[in-house]
Length: 88
Image (cartoon, rainbow, N blue to C red; front, side):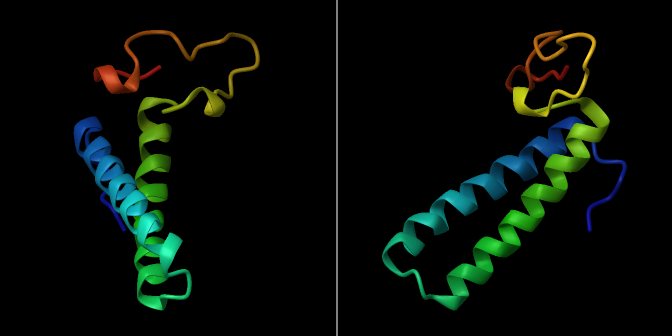
């Protein structure tokens, strides 16, 4: 479990690293679909990514336009984008 007081940069690093790990093991799983060790690694990386993603979204706003919840105003493009060091 991650600390609740993580800053934006720390969470983005976790998300980026976990996403890379998931993409990397996904390539291996394409040719070794029954490898339990690789499946477990993917599951762990996904759990880390999901937790960091949720924490980031709750603290700093959505990381993608699919997560915009404001029904009265489209706030996805407000301010710098997450990859520019900002959030909605």
